[in-house]
Length: 229
Image (tube, rainbow, N blue to C red; front, top):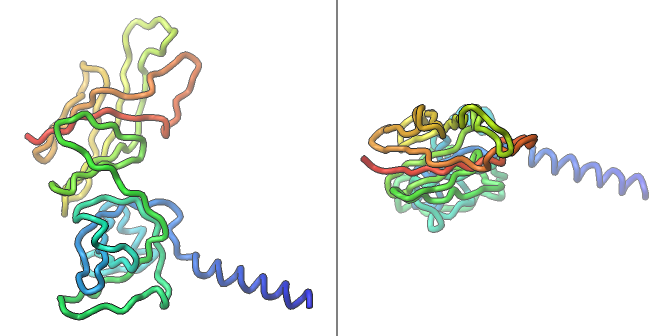
């Protein structure tokens, strides 16, 4: 009897591992590219992680992927999500109507996601490390990629100059490849730039360095003003 219970437990674990083996380990950046009206679900594209998705799910026409569990009524075209995905199980594929044009996109099951906050043009917005803000109306998004260096004079230290921090961002418009750009906290370096008709101005970077206190990447928050030219 004990052997039977042990065998059943091992079998259940193996089946569980097999089901989850295709799940993406880290969050992928996805954009709502459109909707499947027959299934009332979202169609995703992965502008930064397309190769990762192709390796896990397979190549899909136009690099678009249909979701089986994201309802179109909860999202907007152009909205940015951070998602974990896997191949859907057969019993997760729901029947759809056939009133509208159909697509032969590969399906994905979204196991977890984080919605990106919306950015407001003309206002100061705060972006955390590895976070993205999106503007669904203009179908653009910007992300804080990394802080390349931070030589700002720490609190409690006397320095001969105030120092500088360089922050790298990612920006993308619909159907365009992401663009990397760098801005600085010191006004003697590039702190404002125009890309694709939008001006980006870095107005602050938190936290400010303190003597003998190391700042980790995930602690950084950049303050940015984005304006349409």
